[in-house]
Length: 193
Image (cartoon, rainbow, N blue to C red; front, side, top):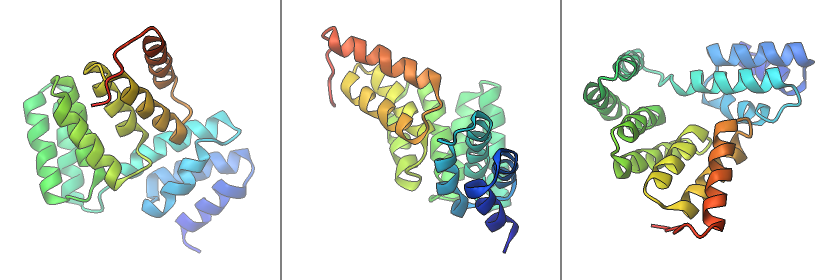
């Protein structure tokens, strides 16, 4: 049994401390084969397991399997943190060109487009992310924020619900969903396109 397989087994059947350690280890060494069990761990009875599983999913999602692509992704993240948005878009576009099936390249570029107010482009990248990684709760909620900004309340509502269906541990998304539901009930336009 590989260390990853052992960690998956511990995450599924171990005691609380073993599940926490397994979730943490999978963040460091896990691949795409660990994602589904990590998503299930987002519903674990233990808050610590849920928190570690969420963090570990992000770690797994930021590994493409190519060290050069991963380094480029990190450079893009650093540009984003510096608020060098045009530079970040360029870096994430290079990631996508070099690894077109790597979902996180699209997700990170979607984030930058959202910050730039380029909602249609952000939505396209969120959809590309989810097409490659249907569990990507970040892209689902990000697309919801874009739809909200465009006044597409019912679509935003649906996306927030989908995001919470994958990861129910996101209070900000719960707040966004509740606010959107109130707006729809109050007669918000609820545009679907």
